[in-house]
Image (cartoon, rainbow, N blue to C red; front, side, top):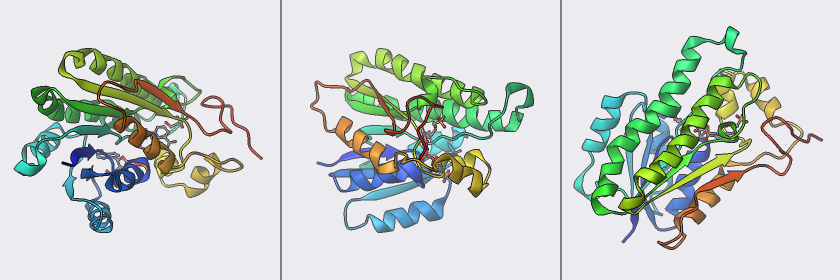
Length: 250
Ligand code: NDP
Ligand code: 8X3
């Protein structure tokens, strides 16, 4: 029987790449995000590979998250894997120049949203004493860099929550994997720079970054380990990136 995987933030980048690789590898998919048109398009493109259910909600709204999970048809209720991927960075500035709304978007999405969906889905796993939660954190959850303050704090929180979940769920047979990527060429920088394509492109110029597929392959590998093996924490960087800020550009 195919396992059911719920992926948050499947409308772009890493989440979309994870959906595509898991569809080819015997998983049924619940895809979530705010852009319904993209969810429907992805569902259509995967229709010959697996069953897909789309859930359209803003992860910052606890009631939307809870209602979406409560609304699942019976055959989709038994979620085996939760991939906490939805997230974003907005802005890049010193704290004294910080934009409060940017901070709130990051905190509400990256920390509170991740908690809301985990709160709704994890009881299903606890009940059956089996499951796997994969949190997409960041190199920014391992290091802090100039101007990255609040984003970095949210990803440190994800890192801490991965450890906390591993402790809380150890008696419930639930695996928890933290994945911390460096630069991945997605819509991430376009969002961080509020639609400024030139600034976004500069982030990846002169080097080969990671692509969503590189992270998706690691997710698949983690999911394919035998029942007694859990990958706790994986840092994955482009070869041309040594730390969050030290990169080699041609
Ligand atoms: P993208 O911008 O390409 O994708 C982000 C996804 O998150 C989209 O599907 C978006 O869906 C979803 N999302 C954002 N806000 C919300 C919300 N309020 N409610 C529901 N869904 C939301 O970026 P990435 O694929 O790069 O990012 C995925 C994760 O990877 C993030 O957690 C990011 O922090 C992390 N990461 C990214 C790195 C990078 O360099 N790209 C490096 C390290 C970590 P929609 O807008 O349709 O709602
Ligand atoms: C994204 C990686 O280095 O831009 O999480 O913070 S970084």
